[in-house]
Image 1 (cartoon, rainbow, N blue to C red):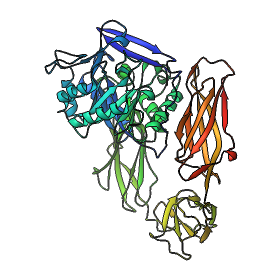
Image 2: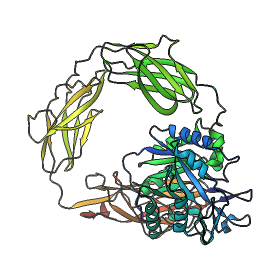
Image 3: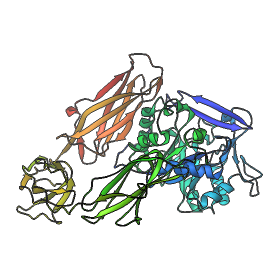
Image 4: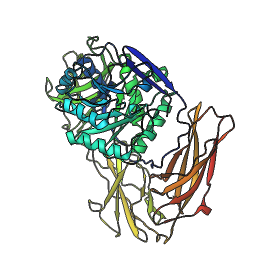
Amino acid sequence: MAKRLKHRAYASIVVCLLLVGMLSSICLSDIPLVKASPGAVIYAGCRESTYGISPFPEPEEWEQDMKIMANNWSGSQPVGVWIVGILAGEGEDYMLWTECNLQFPSPGGSYEHVIFDNTDFHEPYLDYFDTHGIKVWLQVEPGLADVPTLIDLVLNRYGSHSCVVGFGIDVEWHKQTEHDWGIPVTDDNAQAWEAKVKSHNSSYTLFLKHFWYTWMPPTYRGNIIFVNDSQGFGNLRGMVSEFEDWGARYYPNVVMYQYGYEADKKWWKRLSNPPKDIGDAIAAVVDQDLGLIWVDFTLRDVFPPPGGDNTPPVISNVASSSITGNSATITWDTDELSDSVVRYGTTTPPGSTESDAAMVTSHSITLTNLSESTTYYYEVQSTDASSNTAVDDNNGSYYTFTTTEADTTPPAAPTGLTATAVSHSQIDLDWNNNTEEDLSHYHVYRSTTSGFPCDGSTFLDETTSSDYPDTSVDDNTTYYYKVTAVDTSSNESDPSNEANATTPEAPTVLTMHVLRIDMELLIPNQYQAKATVYIVAENDDPVPSATVTGHWEGIAPTGGISSSTNSDGAAMFWSPKVKNPPSGSLFIFVVDDVTKDGWTYDPNANVETRDNVMVP
């Protein structure tokens, strides 16, 4: 967990608190960390609070900034984390505040630890979002107020708005007077709160927000979105490492990340496009679908004021390339972030359009389904975040390209195919590289009968490399293989030579052991170690879904903790954090046991059973 810098305001007072070192005694839970195929940025936008930005933006500015954020990732929905209930109380120590101030009038009745405003601050904004493509989660900072009551009050008030997609709880301010940084959410809490939210609308989602996982429900996941708002990192790498761990812990649930805090500005201010650059780095390591939220505290540091920009982008370097009989790629540059539109056709003015909403400075649009040996006219267009549009039609003459004649010549048949059974569950294929400039990929075919045809019934997979590991084989079986080469015009070669291999019989007793332990030292001045334990079978194949149990020794001892191996056979463990440990002290991790149904752990085969990393 990064150190925390949290902002609050009450009676026009902004209070800042720096939290360091308060989790040094917390041990990891036994929730397994897993990996899967990469996800996508499906939500992107901004956090809102009435204390985080002044003067408070008009609806048009919120819309602009949320859409700029979302336009960084094609297909992303512009969203807001919209705080309608803020922590309130007397005095400057907001850790002692107990009330949730809902910023709309009371519906009548008495609600313990809930106070209301005389006017509705948020209704005009939600009205605007309803008709401008923005979606929001309505969030509260509950204090000592009853969370189900807050859910009912908020969703009864605003549930008619089409922009509302769910409800959020900042767990950091859930009964924080009874437990530092909030009462951890139990599984029963999470399940009951989610059910309460969905009782208002079954399509609503609940999010839970905190900067550290021990405040999240231990095992209940449901359809909850898990939001991390940690801050105070030394650099981008530290942020990405912590956020990667958060995503892995809650896979496959959607996760969201709030970033852009002042505490991190010392390094993100040097990035060319902080919202996108940080978001791209996070998205590159998170395996499930995710959301990216820029915070309101620094909104105007990275997004332009509405109406302040009246200058359209400057378009340059318009070109066409990669021209084939049925496709062509159009590229150009702009001097600011803007979207991409190409209008093209065989007559002028061109009538067909291809576009990409992503806000970029280097633009590329690929046109497909073109006719061969045909001249096409085209123009390009880009619009910036302030709706300023530039069109380059080559001074009214339009740019042109001519598609080539259809390519009907297939590549040469691949040569030198070999098949090697490396285990009872894998056969490795290898062949010589084809040298055609228009080579696209290879098709792999497989059968249990020699002399088989290469068709849909025997197609196995496609690959861009001249080798292929077949891991979908049975033991004690002979398989026959052929490969073909395919070019960019979808011409497929004749088959290669046929190769075969026979898998051995699977061992009757499956054994596994520790191949290695990788140790890593994290977070200077607030030290923590990470141990990655790799479990393999007798033939060194990774063993997924095994439970590894171990413990930490040295300067951060723990009891037994467990984690499950991912598809690479890797199980990850984090030590407790230690503030300012002496130089030369050791974080030591020891493997105690490995279990998996149908498998036997053979500790005598371990390459290592313990490892350490030293504090410099």
